[in-house]
Image (tube, rainbow, N blue to C red; front, side):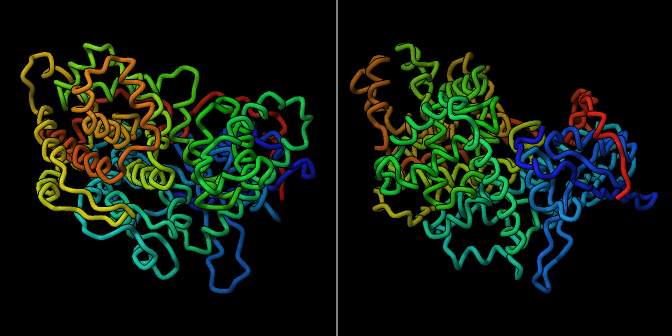
Amino acid sequence: MSTTSCFQDRDAIRVKALLENVKGRELRCFAVDPNITSFENLSQLLKRAFQLSGEFEISYQLPQSSDTGKRPDVFVSLTSDFDLDAAFLSASLPYLSLRVDPLLRPDEENDWAILNISEAPPTNNVLSSKLTPSVPFHISIKHQMEKTLNQITKALTTPTKKGPLKDSDWYHFLDCEGRLIHTEEFVSWVFQCGVVPSLRKEVWPHLLHVFPPDLTSDERERYLLMKSQVFWHLKSEWQTRDPKDIESLSHMIRKDVVRTDKACPYFDVPEDHPNIESLFNILMTYAIVNPDVSYVQGMSDLASPLLVVLNDEAIAYTCFCSLMYRMKTHFLLDSKAMSQKFEHLSLLVQRTDPELYKYLVNIGAEDMFFCYRWLLLDLKREFQFTDSLNIMEVIWSTTSPFGSQGMSSETFNSAAKTVRNKCENFKNDNIVCDIGLEPEEEDEDLEDSFTMINNFNGSDTPEANLIQIPGPYELGSGNPFALFICLAILLLHKDYCFQKKMDYNALAMYFDKMLRKHDLSRTLAKARVLYMEYLEVFNANNKPEECSEIKEESNPSSFWLEDKAIEVPQQLGQFIQC
């Protein structure tokens, strides 16, 4: 169901849906009740209306701009209830204009060229000519997505001696209308050196994949305006409820908010200050709209940097939703995502430094539970607040715009292969990034990293040789670089822990007291080196396979839109003429 009841003044919204295919143009006009229509309801309704048997995508038209010379026919993807609310609120007068794009199967078309990410259209019906009709359709789509991400990963490994991304540099990645057209170079720059504070407000939504592709600067403003309108309606909805209904949740969030990042001047204010209220409103709205996640301690740490940088409650909420799309599994009660991260970090230590791993085993710390705070919050609390902003944006630059769902490592090899020649240059190149810290002396640990990481190729013990490190799309649930920051911290502090002969309790207390005390420059430099060595060795040990050799069981469900049996309310199935 739609996540808000803010459409009480509108019993019905008129919809015009257009489908274009080889048979021509088909138009369907009908009305829906915005108070009970969910994204899945709408998908099923369109499927029946056009008698579609395969997969398809839905997009809706942005509100037309009154300015002359602006494109009036901009369509953006509609993929969730949040998008549907935005469409209902700001793009449905006099009617909601939808476009339905069936996704072609490999046996229907085999001449499609693979485009670079900057050339990709807003829809994703681009298939690889290398895929044979015998490959299941959902595999072909995954292959195309992964090839695009491979190009981004390749860009991450390009050495640079430039400082953090500045305003003058940022505009080189945009065309004359403000579209982001050089995505690979953009994320590479952020990965290597970060972003200057004054530019973060504009760049962070791109790193968090808030915007659909191919939007001009004017269209992005309109898009954020729509999302903001959704937030204000969602917020007003729970604010009008009986306080007793949300008293427990409100008390829990308020208790965390008033003590979040008090060292930051933005939050070092009285408890009734608007900055505190804004953070509370963001978390409260998210918890009510997403009852499957609700609120868990630690979410305030993820939302606070967004509010500080963006200084806009509604836009910060929109970015927080995008961030939580990837990180919400950290806070689920089943703890599956966190358990997997513990396991993956343990494997990395075991393969990278057997001596350190043996020490952890001897003190009963090989489960890596003492790293819980690091993994839960993507290391946000481990550095000073200003340094944590740099850590967060670097991590975001390496995450997939498609999320970790549905990804495999089988086709990552082609990207890792491009790293082989570049890593050697990177190791010998002293990368200097002006990130506001004093330059560090050359660290011997960075040289040792290459020796230690070579244990991926083989170890002295037969047991270690049997250990398999997951591929980059699986490692860390699609966020591998955060694990390499954790690994870098452990390696940088290894000798001191050995020297003090710490047991488990002493080790846990030591790292707990290192809260906001880790060195940003040394940690990031070491983590980058370890990460790219991992990519290089992963490629050396995994020869690329042709797409036609991919072995996966076919799944009758659509990769993009699972065809679940959904009861469409009778009133939604009644077509009426507009």
